[in-house]
Length: 639
Image (cartoon, rainbow, N blue to C red; front, side, top):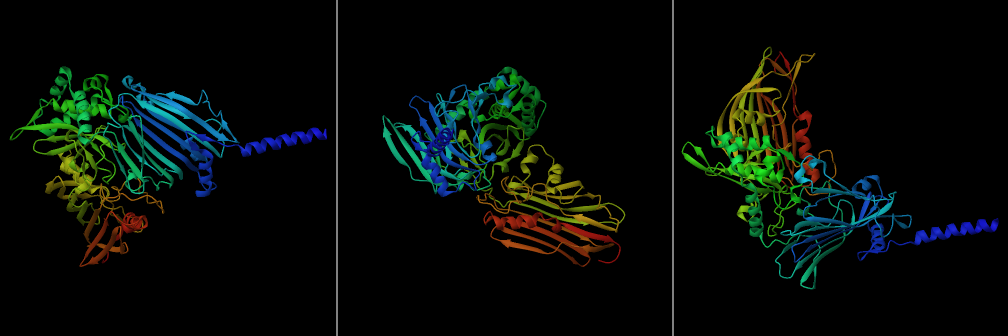
């Protein structure tokens, strides 16, 4: 019996030794064990949620017009958060004109591959229909394939490799950022293009220099980066503006891209007699050109529901007639329908005669920087919209979700109008981005208060486009006022300046007045304008984060609020303390002074668009601090 026990123990030891000595081996030419060893020595695994051992993308432009994209990813996982990010994947693609092939989907744990080194589990690849198109039959070719790794236990290594092939695609373009959301050991991009095809690539600062290999009528350009690190957090809308990246495109030039896109869009935007009659019936009784435009856009919004699917999965939009007939459309299709309906108006009447009307698609970038402007492409982050021009140059921008904006909506953003061929990287509106208010309050002890003053908004804050698009001056002024005077009513306003890049109005109104507390005091809180500096910051700027490693993409802007009130019949109980914050990111000043029977409160904040995160955070925290906004008064006595 003792002999049998020793033999069993020896067998277990041999199994354990074999498991510990087992190797992941190579995959598609990559040594996975060497990558894991580098992860341990470079980043350490004990403190990481995940480490990306390999992020590899191959893009192959075939001579027959097919475009093949191969995604190969290997990740060491050490936490439940990472499981959700890397082990349960969703791959969107379009079955109409594309094919998806999953080559590798496996998990390395306990010295072996699960479920198998060379076979994929039958339940690991699940093809689903995106919920957004479940009641939109024309979009049923859209697929969202779930890739589910079996055998997950912490820690483990997951490997995924899949291929998407698009048939007869016009060109390929994209942005590859080398650092990933988690520390990365190796990131590689390769682009293969036929020798007779013009293409473009720009290697951005920090990215590796490429190598080129040639074979059989094609050449392959490879960018291979060892230990690129991790994306700065929080991830910005445009990481390629500051991180090592490559922008590539197999489009010949911007003009070719624009011509192909414009031809497809114009064909889709052509409308038939029935739709033309409906547009005419909706607009023939209207005289004002902007009212006609608004009526058409309202007609599109009311007659079709918006399908929230990725427009980039379709090479061309559906016809406008089909979108109208089915009463639904994605952003791409609704833009074509709106353009066709507006073009059916041809010209619109004005007081001085007929004014021309044009409606063309435009793409608006999320970021601020002009990254690789010589590389023709449609960036994944670009937002499609409709650029509408009425008369001699009054611009409107309509987005597929149904919102209408003025020209300032395009300011400070990379802009590409396909019909013009070349992009315009407008990084400034040409004027300061400023919102300001100079208000006078007239308080009374027993009755409501009154107020008057001037509201100004210019640059990116200008409400001119909203007013031109149908909002009344009073409504725009009320939006500008925001919460500067909580619960204030606006009775009347008169424009002082009214141009696209700036609006200034003189206003007056009433205020219920702060509620008197038990101790006889009243608290006046001076809040923010409707669209001020704090509300205008990008979504990735979170003031609750004391540390930040990503770049700050923020335009220069300013806000200045002054409130004056006579102190007849009131005593000052408490005023905000004087605040002065001044650094490279900007400044914030708060002051409240009493002189000659008047209280003058002023809060000013200005951002330069530069500076470090601690500097910017210091300015914004003071700008939003509650104690800097409260004025406490008490009825009776001298000030």
